[in-house]
Length: 374
Image 1 (spheres, rainbow, N blue to C red):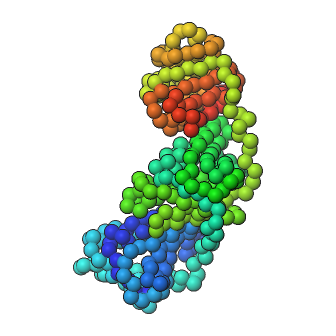
Image 2 (tube, rainbow, N blue to C red; image 1 turned 90 degrees about the vertical axis):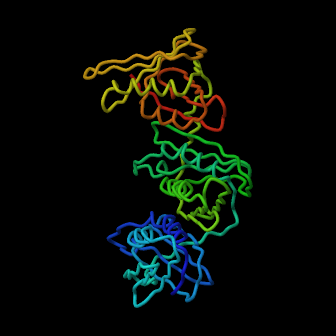
Image 3 (cartoon, rainbow, N blue to C red; image 1 turned 120 degrees about the vertical axis):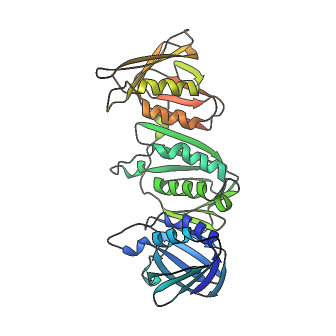
């Protein structure tokens, strides 16, 4: 195996794939990155057995072949090289790298021992703009559960509707986030599946960090086949297993009717919640939201026997009945931080039912916080 490419291109490719690698006592080779050189192409691959990431690197191929080396050492070393041509060659179970005055030899391992990355049949697919997908993933992925006892809640629920729309949902049973995405193109009529949160986070990371390849413009293609999902754009592919199981009927907990609706400025609400959070009870994180009828205000308060108490009144347009709810301030802040826009709409039935938080500018996103019952 022998090839050459620019340091910048190799650095970018290693950024894309090396994040998945790590120490694995049962299969140490998972800490390596696989370099495949064939048919005039240079391909970098990594996997943790659940997710696989590959990236093609532009360069000149002289001798085809494949080899694996420690991903961290290779990535760290390439990052330190000057932005010049890098010559790479496999010699006696080592990777010999030359760039300007830098010369090194990194010991590696045969590619024969590297796990095979599954392939996905590219038939069922949809296209989504990168900014839209990136924003949508960020708006829901934080709400997934970290409790492995209910595996289906550790993933993001994808619901494809009539070749036109993708609805993604995440919940940990304490709060829920739902985002609707309009598809640019799709042949997936109606289908639902659960994608691991780590896969969603990996796609977001790659999109956020690779401006030239998977950056702020362009489209991502999503392919679904049996128990696998594939995200692809340009030279980068992310393939992942799906989570088996039945996602709960989350629509049941979203209130359809409301007795009280309040609209206020998001920045004012965030400031009021954060100030009251300083006096919330440790471990409970409780703050009170009061909606006095015809008062034009939301009262945010908290009290603790150890630290004291706090009351903040913020101007709001409140319609409906007097109402009151106690919520976890951390969960509420997560929702307020992801709504977007300047105004927030808070809808409430009573203090024992979920609190619905939405933007006044769009119906594409909603967030539900379960109450802390007194």
